[in-house]
Amino acid sequence: MKIERATGLVLRLRPLTETSLIVQWLTREAGRLATVAQGARRPKSPFRGQLDLFYLADLSYARSRRSELHQLREVRLLDSHAGLRTGLAWVRQACYGAALLEQSTEAEAPVPWAFDLLRTWLRHLPGQPAQPQAIFAFEIKALQELGLKPKLEESRLTSGARQILEKLLGADWPEVYRLRLSEAQTAEINRFLHGFLVYHLERVPRGRNAAVEAREIIEKSGVCH
Image 1: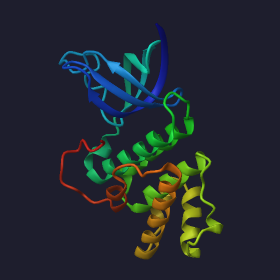
Image 2: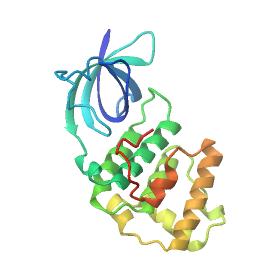
Image 3: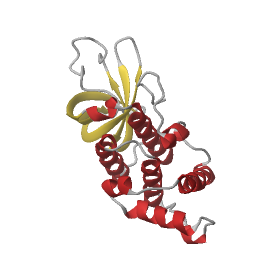
Image 4: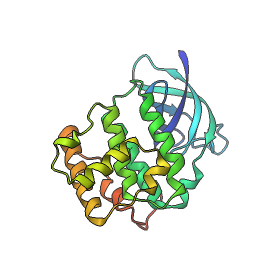
């Protein structure tokens, strides 16, 4: 088997057997890929404490010749993004961003921009109260990279809403959080981007409403579906 290495973010985990996990990654080198972590659910597994939602890690894996499910060999944790877990609203926003990238990119196709976008966002999410413009900024930045940037000048948006979207597109994350939107602007931009995503991607990933509203919903923190 060919051994490959990458740096990746954990997008999803699910049980494969009583002792093993399937780990979905977004990597910089290979894009989205799936690995089997054999024995990861055992108490003395070398993977113990190394795999969880949005963990950033260096990994090595043996590429399968038969399927897109590869064998995870080693993991070295780089960042657990512990701050995310202190607020459910941040987790919900991060889950939506990950779902959007999953839906709009192909498996095992290198998309370094997607990895960089999500990684940078995850670093900044816990630093500010969850706000709807964080979702709007993530969406329009992703749309631009996908070659689907809205032609704002041809839209029916008000001039104020157009200006905000242009700012969100070019702003870094600290600037995004400094912007102040009125309720009317938030509602207008929300409707516009929702409709745009439906038109170009056929459906909106699950969890968008909760992510935009950024409400603290009382439930377990395993909220990525």
